Amino acid sequence: MISITNNSYYLSGLAKINIPVNANWTQQGVSIAGGHGNGNGTNQLYWPHGIFVDDDQTVVIVDHMYHRIIQWKNGHTTNGQIVAGGKGLGNGSNRLDYPTDVLIDEETDSLIICDRGNKRVVRWSRCSGTTQGEILIDNIDCFGIAMDEQRYLYASDVGKWEVRRYQLGEKNGTLVVVAGGNGKGAKLNQLNDSYYLFVDRQQNVYVADYKNHRVMKWTKGEKEGLWSLEETVWGMLRHSCRILMDSLLIR
Image (cartoon, rainbow, N blue to C red):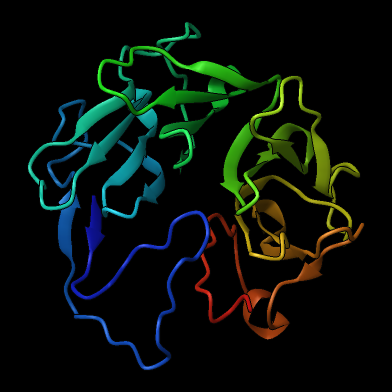
């Protein structure tokens, strides 16, 4: 079940709003997606993974176990709409295989999806009637993706313990390692199962370093990461998986 509280706002991709230091949330959440047990109905989810919210507060969710991307429009909480996959597990251009993350590329009005089981990153148009996607990056054990304001796409490659960057719009664009890439390990230049990502306005990369139980920050151009924020806080993490930050923290 996915929930949202009154007077709150999901952060998506880049932090676009400031959350006041004294912001208050209600004590009870309101279901906006799922909540009807696990299943393949359009009012159900089964092991949801990545989530993205657009400027209209449409919620796009990776429904991991049913190999689909499903969206709930703001105010429509009964049933979602399948916008990618949903044809069962497979490697065809109309199928997904245990996807893990999704974001919206507003410039092309498309979804970019980590199709992890197929070891690829794919793009699906959001136009009505779209029935298949196109491959952006192949041969990558992708788990998390993020995009910066210059439309660079960042993807974590769990199998290579690294985060790579790709310029959207470039044909045969090269993949550049921006974090990790030095084998599996716990050193400051290594990762051990990099899961989800966050990229700030300065193109610094924050990585949920799952099996090292930490969140790492790679400053743009650096070869080693730093323990993000205070070690006394982040150092107590166990199996860190997802990271989002508001703009007050990343200035």
